[in-house]
Image (cartoon, rainbow, N blue to C red):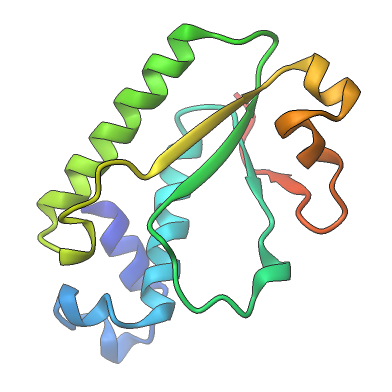
Length: 141
């Protein structure tokens, strides 16, 4: 529930004690929750987060988090960890009682990006050279 408390801290003080299902209707709370969840995830692994400021006209969040991870080579262990982290995150949010997450099956996509993809700017490696959606490093392990 730390994520919800962190998100509540980001909204107007008079709204902080509002019931969760009502806060879920407020864009600023939903986006604050998304950021809180991303911050918590990136503290566990070295990842990059996309700078979506060019998409400021978006009014809703689909409930998914996309995190590209620079890796020296593809790792089945990281893939398993990502699935476990995703399931734990979904379970945690379902327990919150917020209907937005009741039917959610998955929400975290961790995409491994290899040096070859970065060097040749292919696949997700191309995103690191993109003009409008350049990822911003948010944590280094």
